Amino acid sequence: MLSLDLVWDDLPRRRDSSRQMSPLTQPPILTWQIAQALLHQFQQGKERAEVSLDLGISTCQVSLQPQGVLLPDGQQLDWEVLRQIGENQTTCYRIEQNIPHPLRLIGQSSDLTIGLMPTNAAPALLLGGLPMHRIKDIDPWQDTQRKLKAAGGAYGAILDTATGLGYTAIQAAKTAQEVMTIEIEPAVIEIARQNPWSKELFENPRIRLVIGDVFEVIQDLPGNHFSLILHDPPTFSLAGELYSSEFYRHCVRVLRERGRMFHYIGDLQSKMGAGLLRGVIRRLLEAGFSRVIRKPQAFGVLAIK
Image (cartoon, rainbow, N blue to C red):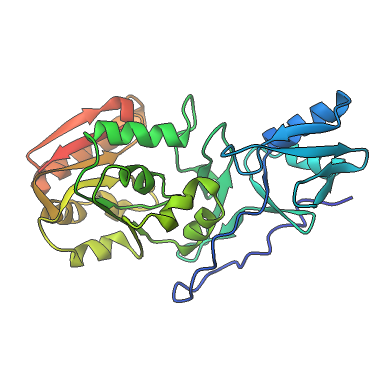
């Protein structure tokens, strides 16, 4: 019997940011939803099933055989492995050489585990076991659309301060002239490279991906350049400097006149969100923004220069 705990990951624990990134590859990816669906259809006596092996981007036919599932690329997984995958609702598995490998890495800038969590649509980024996207009654792709709508749309030059899986940069690039997106953690980019929903992050010529600490990178960016900043930082406990007056002053400096910054905070109605909101608004105004508008549907605020 194959134990999924023993198939921890053959990806490196840490990644040297000076090394060239590996090419974008897309082996089959399985989630608990797909595993449970295959088990159910096999129990119903079906011999074939139509499923998605790229997290919902497309579908394909797989063969349901007595010994297991035969994938289109010739790989095979036995039913016990499918049962184990079906019990883990927080992990996506890439399939290589008939073995499921959890899409997880240990960070370079921290020792936190970074992974890909399945949803009913675009997967969420997990950082230290916590989802970095909204997943309750919404999926990460829809959440990104709400942020862009709250920001008033993306036009001209855009600064995305925390790349993550690239959803913000990808959607902003549909209408913006250029998007600079900054990510401090190389392991997050490695996870994104294996996420089919992140493909355009690496292929869209309007997107410039920078690996670095945005708190430092922004200090070297030209003034009065960006029309919009999309600021969706990690939690305050993980990256308090990205909620600081000093960082906000740099945001004001790089924005054009009447430029905007959408700042994700969290549920503004929650006790934690409301407490954080007061300090964020005060520091944004002290930094030089002329006004700050609450955007509760998007879990953030819009600051106007």
